[in-house]
Length: 147
Length: 138
Image (cartoon, rainbow over all chains, first blue to last red; front, side):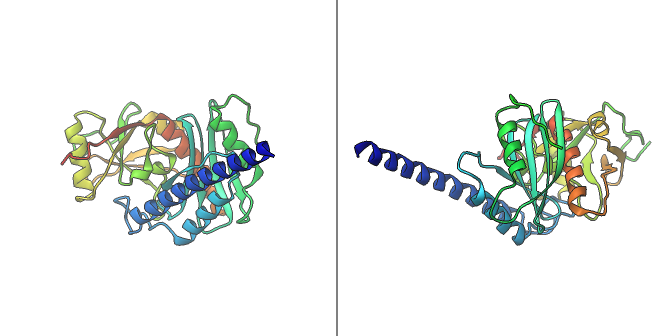
């Protein structure tokens, strides 16, 4: 009984910590969108970050399983948002979220690389994306085969 | 010879500076791939033909080009690394020292096009060196 209670308490603590981490990530996302809310935020012809992209990115972060690292966010000149998992300069995944449910991505994993398009239904992160995140964030110790 | 007195052809070993106007275009390790993506209308990425030194000149170029807009630093990459990503770089003055990364893929399918562009931007980011501007710099 005591062990079960301890497990529940630990699980609750993890959930709270995770909620806090996701809340912090979503706060960073909002700050980035605010920073890039004006046309020409790049000193050139960039368009403002699209509010639809922000909502989609929020949904994507919420849909990430608990054991998957949270991304960094970056602005893109077409108003999309880049979700980046960067372990090192040659082990990374960059995923674009814009107005479409189809998400463009590119990854580097040591000397391997790839790119493609995955569909996000708003609820479930595409399994292939989860696989790539886990591999590049483990610094490529495992091979990544994507077709 | 151009008005800047630079040659018309951008040589492979030339440094190219991409100014970073958002703190989210880089992290402690590197400039992120998105920092190199082209602007939608221009179909090109704006860079300047200057390396990390003299640093004061680099920041002056940024201040002038960005017309007082705050920027956080620059990612510097060799022209050969841009070309290795199957893109090209051309002199594009004025303003002085300005150049443009061109040859970004175009496809009918917007997301497939974006994925190809991101792949090339990631290769450039992999090679680029980040130089941060001191926050109290003028």
